[in-house]
Image (cartoon, rainbow, N blue to C red; front, side, top):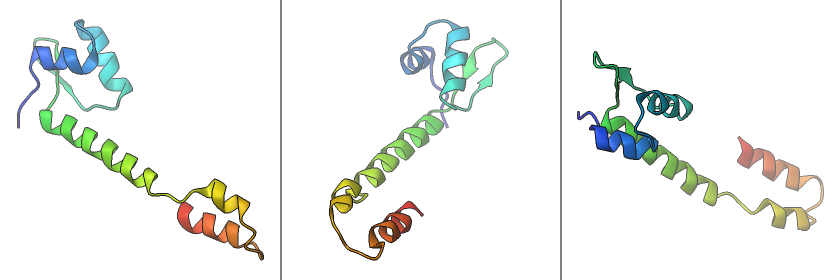
Length: 89
């Protein structure tokens, strides 16, 4: 486990000031601890985990069916609604 260094934390948050870095980390649900020096400490593994999860979510949403196309189909008997409910679960 490695803690991000000062330059990496600045690149991640887009800020050089500690106060703004902490605000950004909180807004983006990044876990961190405050060191005795008053600076936020972030694990590199945690950042990689967050980025990996976001990429996985993007790939999942791109695999969803095209509901607009389903709306144009007339399958009858409310099948469109059943299909939507199946994919929404």
